[in-house]
Image (tube, rainbow, N blue to C red; front, side):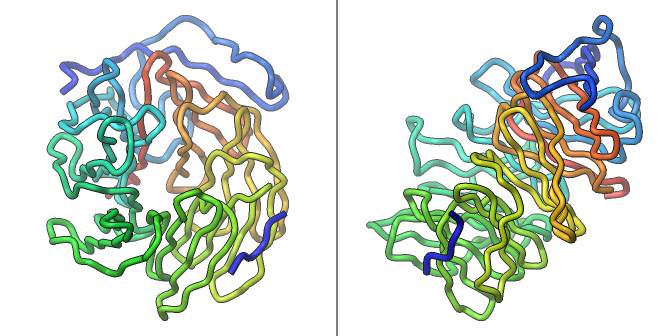
Amino acid sequence: MIGLAGGFAAAVLLYPTVIRTQSETTPDSEPETVGEAQEIGGIADVVDGFPDALVLAIRSDGQSLGSMIWPRGGAAYSRSIPVGVPAAREPVTFDASGRIIAALARVGGELPGVLYTGVPQSASILAGNVTGYAWHDSAPYEIAYTTATDDVSELWLRRSRGSEPELAGELEAAGRIAAWGDWGHAIQDDPGNSFHVVGSDGQMTTYSGRLLDSGPSGALVMESDGIGYILLGSTEVKEVSGAESALAARFSDDGERLAVLGSEWVAVVSLVDGSERRIPAGAPGLSQLVWSSDGRFIVYPGRNRLWVIDTQSDAAYEVLAGHVIAGVGIVPPGS
């Protein structure tokens, strides 16, 4: 029940491509490979109508990271990323511009860890002793992170590229930043059973559940025996999906839809009329997904591949088979 609680040396050009449609498959079926590996150009040559470039973090040998930029037209190209390697299930994330990465490398496999940020090929250490971080949900370059010191969680904000982080507050409990934006910020407690939302007015509200995403309007999505949707300023939690164990969720840029990632499906939920449909797709490799800039496609890392979901046709494209994807970002046209 949901409730309120208080380079790589050269580009790789050969990728097998798979297309699955809702009418042809079920969530338990295996992908069907169409043809042999083929030389391809840009992502728009593989996924018809895809509007953006993709930028990906890729584990090259299990011990190092590289970045791959896949333009709409033209071959993909790669660069090395000089950062410590995050834990296997810890995604590399991208800011709102799609150009700047953040990676939390765990020391000895445990938290706190070391936070790296920057342009992929020249990322550097921003802070140590970090328990969690979150990109601003709409402003490029802006990042928040929490550190643990003597049983106190400190919240730090870096508000522009190249600026020094500033201490924004302290919490006398174990917790980590889960989301932030112009609306305020949210701190997830250490067990992951509740989170605290501090609005721009300084007022704090506590909710039960696990926070998954925030939108620039101040909308939050949480998971607690299903999916909940909150608008800041309201104590009401609306249940918008019956997913028993959502791995990740992401608001569309216009704030009208929500993508929910399951074990073998992606759900698209309308926040306007409450309608929902599930699109069968491949198993995720990470708890991460992004929308294309036009709100048509959903992209997420699979197991040694990448999945691109067309929400108009319900087709699921399997691309970059054989690559271990550690993170995915969108670079819109003209950015």
